[in-house]
Each structure stands twice: as C-alpha cells, then as structure tokens.
Image 1: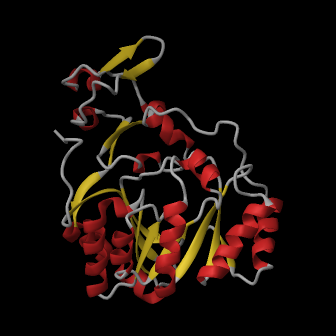
Image 2: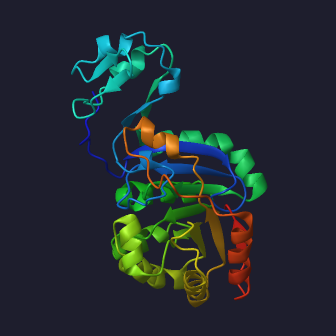
Image 3: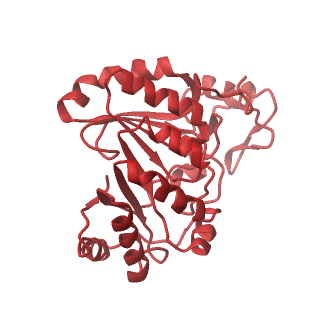
Length: 309
C-alpha cells in the first residue's frame, strides 16, 4: 500500500513523468523530470496530476469494459459498477493501494506518480545522453513546483552537474527565498513562470499573490541566465497593459527571452480522470492573430520572443 504521507527527502522524490527527447524545456534536446506537488492551483493548469505530491489514481473511462475485476480487488469498497453510469469510484474511500490498477485487463485505471531515487532517475537520464550532448541539450527539472521537494531537487541538479549534464530549473518562483537561491546555484538556466503582474488578479486565478514570486525573481536574476515563461490566457493576461508590464519586467531583470505558452485544452481529460471538476469550461484558446500581436508587442520592447519553449 502507498501512503499519502510517505516521507520525501534528498534521496527520494515524487515524480509523475520523465520525458525524454523534449524540445520545449530549454535549449537543445532535453530530458525533463516532472516533480509532483504544487502550491498553486492555476485555473488553466494542464497537469492537475502534478498538484499533490503523492501517487494518484487516474481513470480512463473510454477503455473500461465493465468486467468488475477492479470491484473485486478493491479492499475498501471504493469501486462499484453502476448499470447506467458504469464504473464509479468513491475517492474518499480510496487508500491508493492500486490493487485495481494491477488487475484491470483494459488498462482503464492507472497510477500517476512514483517515488524514485536520484540514482533511478539518473539511470533514465543516461539513456538520452547522446541526444543531449549532440544537440546542446541537458536536463530540466520541472513540475508541479520542483521547490516543494527542495532537498531532492538540489541533489538531483547537483548530481546532473557532476555528471556533466547542463541543467535547468523550471519554477513558478513561489518558494522560500533561501531555498530558491540555493537551488538556482545548481542550474545553468532558470525558466521562470510569470502569469500576471497584478497581485489580486494573480491570487484570484492561482490561489496565491505574486508578491513573493516577483521579489524572488528580482533577487536571483542578477546571477542567473533567465527565460521568462508566459502562459497566455485569453481574458486573463492578454491585455496590452499586462503584456507591457511583463515585457518591462523582462527588460528590468535582463531576461534572455520571453517564451509565450498559449493556453490549450489538451489537459481537460485529466481532470475527469482524477475526479476533479473541469476548470474554465468556457475558455477559448488564443487566436493566431492574438499570439502574434502579443509577440510583436514584446519584441517591440527589444526582447527576444519564442513560442512554446
């Protein structure tokens, strides 16, 4: 049985994905390690499986064949078959033993997240060494929010550096300042999310103010190579005024570039699979014209802008 409270330390981290051959998380071809756990609840988040630090159960209802094996295997009675609605799971009863996953013949249930050691992750990373070295790539630690597992992430980044892999840290910046400062020392590149410049608007959409985020950025930027990342959300942060303020921040801290990450709805099915309400059901993806308008506005300030990386 996997405990929700299993302790994590500098040798054991909670991971929900290790993605090889990534071209969107820093220069070159990279291996990106996605950590579980995040202090923000962004309304547009595409990876809700990253919110909690422990492994979780995800359903894939379209694949369910209604065989009932999961019902028989569940020790807490959390799963039942409804004649009209199909398989139903009471997540308040589920203890995350994943016995249902083990017996499902249709792979209609899956475990999201594993507790891994630094050594285990390095074994995966080493398989991509040739691609990384030939492309000028490296290793990126992302999330979730990596700094929620600060000791582990520092150890992982340091180990990558010691092995000769260029490193990048992808963070929202909402973390104790000393921890961020310590961790950035082991990263060759800092990918830093900027979602909004107004603290009230930021808190309304993410659950936290941006005061600490902006203060942390201004503290660590002078000694770091920084790419700002802007998730572009229609109706939230795509006004000329907001884009101008984000561009001004980029100039202020000497950002190497600003990466525009247009909102899309590809992650919506994950909410259903985790038993969560679907966020922003009426939200639309930004038009190509709007993306180019935002890009042109930022470039007009003298900053380099890219899309999707």
